Image (cartoon, rainbow, N blue to C red; front, side):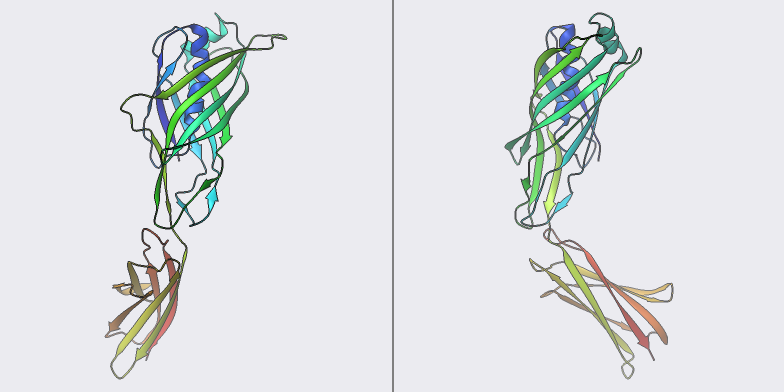
Length: 287
């Protein structure tokens, strides 16, 4: 999952813009989004003016989590410092490397969770843009009960960047703060809580009635709801597909006027807001 943010920086100074480089990576730190949305961030940067930065963020946060479980997603954020700003770093400030640490706030259903995103010391190339990569890990997030849908959003970001000059320069720290711009939808990721399920299929044929009866039982907690799709195949050819409603964890369907021979029935449970999909198969011989 990848998220591109555009950060709007409020001006103050050349050193500040360099600090922003990290700040952007911080704000990205939140979590992976379900889609590539754009979030405007307002950052307090020492005198220089508004500037746009492009940031990509990836995370291993799950789209679905098991009820009662917890997960601590790891974050990787990549920010490109535009060539013109990199020129300022190289020329006016004499920087040949940059590092940073960001205290990034992520709002989990509105509740703040803070994590540290670290940008290791990165060499500034002789020309062109500078790519800064920061990584971090959120504290464990409880998934909650089945059926829940939860939102992770970007919050305030406190950034401390360090700029290095050639030689034994210990580096100069530079703090900035960022927050989502007013009126922004700061959502960066959502996840649902859904239980796993197991589907077992069975099939029988009544030669006298020339009718096949197929059934499927879905085991899950909470109980499954929704529909099961039964697909009857003879060899590689699909003979017929029937949908049936799950009641009490079970669904039943019938197939008539079948050709003699060996068939396969695939029962696919489509899942629900609280239960994940699953599939079962059964053999059927039509005599």
